Image (tube, rainbow, N blue to C red):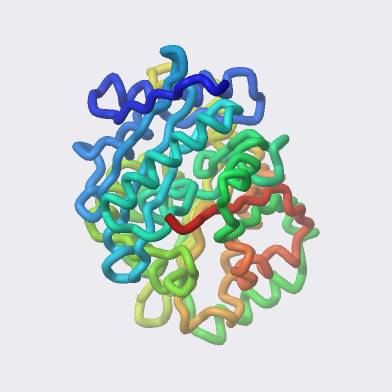
Length: 377
């Protein structure tokens, strides 16, 4: 006989803390789970702190069995997606649970009830409020640590969703790219980079200080919209969200790792954001920001042999014209200078073959797969 699962809606600051800290207990003994920053998670979820609630409605739920927390989930409706893209979808995210189908079922029933209340027709996840939040259930690569911008989960998660009647909605792939020394790097990329720069009269921007990046940040987000707006999962980013991301995340940016390309009129036509890997630092600080833990983050930014690709945007007028060869040529120089030996890509939609072609000139391995799941409600 299944034990009763009690569902509690998050309402107090203590509830938010419990919601965010549950995975720290669930994954305590897992060497591949990389803890998020607790403060960052609360700033994302709390409607008093995240302006995304201007275009979103959400409820957070905790599952209890015998008085102990055994699962959590966020039910989210992005009204831009519903009203402008005409997808009557309730999203679920921050979905973690013990290996008990009664728990996962009860949590998802809470999301479905929330969705029906708002007249939604489908449920999909795991996703966040927008495309800049973590998304995609890990379905391969359980012996690989997640990065600061990706999720980790146990193998049983997908089995629960399939048992509960969910189907795969979208798939993502992630690659690890090996970085050779510059002399050994693909000659084709080096030659092609100069050719494209000269042909289209382009200029590469290198930054030394964070304040030098700020004038281009809005253009980067505008370029993101233009780059990805045809993909099935994309929802336009709002101006107030951009301001929030600048305030929260610009402090983590190492200007050396930002590359921008402008045309002869000075307009941004391509950018890439890469960061040193924070995986080991995040393990050490275990979710808490203190003076000592800040040292670990700063050390990761300055001395590291691994990096992660976060974002790359290319104006549609310049896509399929070899622009990314310029970016990769410059990143190769930087990685060699910083003694970076491997880079992880961010999750790329399986259908986004244009991005995946970028890696064909380098030694690489497909080391993780992700998926989102959906069903009618």
